[in-house]
Image (tube, rainbow, N blue to C red; front, top):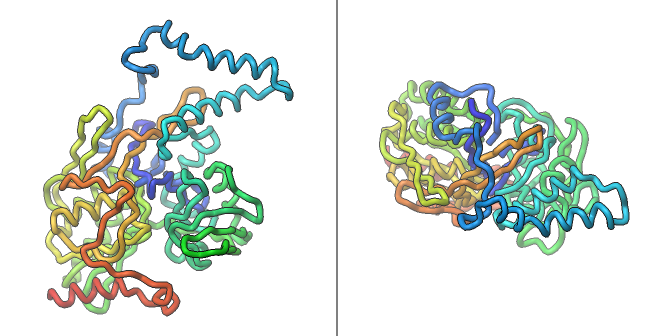
Length: 422
């Protein structure tokens, strides 16, 4: 498999899991190496990934392609480098850190929060597989905002039980101010062994004062598919991410549930921060029999169209999709296609709004990697949902009072709709 994977980064996000691994969603948002890919996904991963060999040398513009042009352009840079080497007060300077800082600055100048540099240590962590068990607080986060931002806590995680919510900004960790600290470094401070505690100071929209949460870290299970039959004779499937094994596990779960002749199906994509692009296409194909699932548009205005893979097992059953503000990236691809085709109703709250695709490109000599936004994606009806999200067909807000009373009014609404249509 190619070392460059196309991923959707969840939530805008470098979609990182505060559970011991760096999960890049967004959509995947995704992880760069994988231990398992289904036969269908394998071929699509390769075809959707641009070659890693013979990468073109960088160019500065169509009008500046000669070595003389490049030398002239970079003359001020090398002058600045030389001044630092001879004039800076604290010598010797760390040339390696200067080089990495120059790369970060170059990418920052693009003004795209989803294009960034990962040093070798960060890149190594980003290669930890999505599925498995990790130690941390269990939350999807966006490291590219001004402060590390919670996209969504994972269900039944320490983060969820403590009361963290989508949009919460981590202002301090264990009392140490995180202003100006790179989000990826903040993540490292939040991670820790199971049983240990971390105190997060949170800024929350609508709250005048900062909030403080003391969270005990745990071992976090990363199973991405849960399914069960509800008492009403309705099949319920929850997807937590779009990982290596999600497509295979979803197929098995659907086959088991559909064998019990349910009257309808609820697909729960709430708090699903995204993951691999090929997995998103495969998941959508279980519910959509044919047609375009999503469209990628590149900077040169060329397009890549992804169509449904034939053989889906749940293309006819009445369908409701649950969504909320933690539904991001790959989840939005699936929900958007289902909504565009009228295949099912979206119930809940407006989704996160992550409409771009990133590629992780490793640098030579273990120099880390660059995450580059390579495309924007569109729904089958040519909708671009970036920073807008998907609007539910039926809006149902889940209030703090509902949560405290252990009520899921969104799920209840989905059950009501399927029961009425019986």
